[in-house]
Structures are given as C-alpha cells and as structure tokens.
Amino acid sequence: DAGPGAVRIVSVATGLELDEIHSVVGNSGSGTTVASLPDQDGDGRKDLLVGAPTELGLGAAHVVSSLSGSIGLTVRGQAPNCQFGRALCAAGDVDADGVSDFAVTSVYDGDPLRVFSGVDGQTLWTRPAE
Image (cartoon, rainbow, N blue to C red; front, top):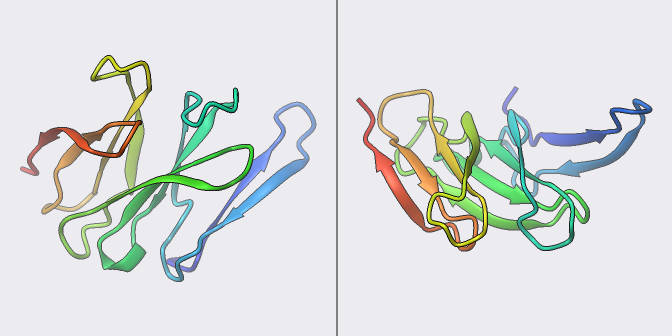
C-alpha cells in the first residue's frame, strides 16, 4: 500500500512498541524499507534510514533520529516512478569524515545506485542504472 506509512519502533527485549514515526507526506510509502544507521545526530543512539519510494513521485529516503523521530536528512530520487528508496542500507564511512554514509537506489531502471554523505546528504558515489 502506498499510503502515508509509519515506522514502529519495538523493543526486542519486551516486544512493546516504544514509538511510532509517521510520514509527513501523504502517499509516500514511508517505512516500506528501513535500515539501522550508526548515531548520525550525536544523541548516542542508533538512527534509522527510512525509505519512502512513492514520495512526490520520485521516491526518497530519510535519516530519522530514533530518539526524537525528527528527520535529519532527506535525499530524493531523480527519475519519476522508479521507487527510489525501495532499497537502502548503511554504507560505512565512505568518505572518512567520521560519520557513517548510506546507499539508496530504486528497483526499476532510471535511478542509479547512489552513496550519500551522512553529514549533508551530498552524493559521494554513483553507479548508473543498467
């Protein structure tokens, strides 16, 4: 379903829901994919990379604080209807600046695999779609 979407944070120890983060953009598919990132915002807790593959028709991925639920960075797809954000992961510290970077792509031709800076969301590396 390409509805607004939400991400539920659940305790592994107790199974209780700790938080729920809702999309701010309707029909975004937010939460279709989620990956864990090392602490991006300096609060001492791991953060989340949340895919929203239908957001604004281009798709997106958001770096979200697991403590506050606030969005720190957003990166967007380049090609319409390619579902950018459907596949994503932490990429380690690609540019050696001390902050973990992340990779995002789509599942359809037209949007390349890109690795983004965890500091400012700038593209560090691109592999064109084949």
